[in-house]
Each structure stands twice: as C-alpha cells, then as structure tokens.
Image (cartoon, rainbow, N blue to C red; front, side, top):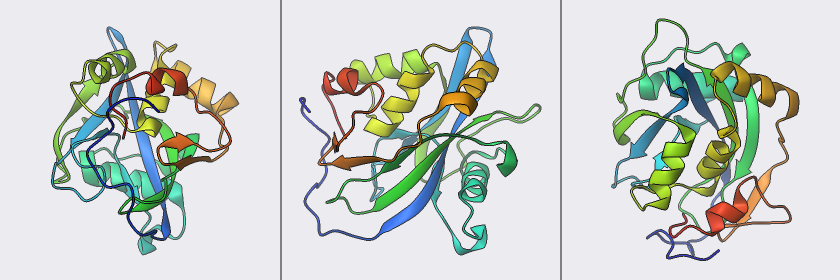
Length: 205
C-alpha cells in the first residue's frame, strides 16, 4: 500500500494468535446511520492512538463463545449491555505477523438497545463518540485520525445504509465471513471491501 504508514514496529517476533471480537455499534440518528468509535490511548501496546470499535480478546469466562466476548467487551468499554444472541456477524480478520499482538477477530453488528447510552468509560481510550461512516472516513482522509484496514472496511461497507435496521438486515443476508489474512498491511489472496480507497489514503496501520 502507498502512503506514509503508521508509526509502529512491523518486524517483531511472531506471537500466538488470540481469538477476539469487536462490535460495530449502530444507531439511527436524525441525519442517518451512525457508529460508535473510540480513539485508543497513545500508550497502548496494540493500536495506540488509533480509532476503533469496542472489542477485545476472548477470556476464560466467555466459555469459548465470541458473541459473549463481544457483549462483555462492549459493556466494559462503553457501558452498553447487548444480548449475544442478537449480534449479527459482519466479517473476520487476522492481524498480520510482526505486531506486538495478533488476533483472529470476528466483527459483529449490533443496534444500540433502546434506553441505553454509550460512553467512554474504558481507560484504553481517550475519547469516544458517534459518527456517520462517511464522516469517519472523511476525517481519516483528512489526516484527523488513524484507521486500521479492518475498521475502514467495516465503515466502507456501511456507507450505503441510512438506518441500523437496513445495515443489520443486509449483514444477516450477505456478510462475507471469509477470513481476511493481512501480510505487512496487505490483504493476502483476496482484497477486502474498500481496499482500493484505503490504499489511496495517506496513513495506513
């Protein structure tokens, strides 16, 4: 990929791949579809100062169920309680070699439950809030924040939708769960949705 790249090591010794889960939390605002994003603290070992969705690695108490991981991490990071059975799979990505941590991550879509609010209670993030997918991508294009390829791709796929219901219905019918394996920041064997637009940007993580 072209561009300056993010300021982090890409040549560390390989480490075990840990299962993980991420939730793309959705709500329908008066202006259209919005997603909840967090900017990670600059001191984090993995993805410092990068804008991400809530999520994290599987824990023993999750009983090997990544939907439980996704719901737990969402509640821990932004205070939203989700029903694991209502999560809709969206995609699956594997962290490339040479990073301090590697994850095999399932991305899920979920609507913000009625009567709940998302916040920035996690110490792993310095800010958080709602944004339309287009605004988040435009801010990245302007160099206002950093996006990893998986985050960009999820935002890109949500561009056509105006409501959370529409996005959830689309994912339930046709989401591609073929793992995207990244090699040095590039997709191996297959190109992800939005790859050309991401490659044309100035900063890649």
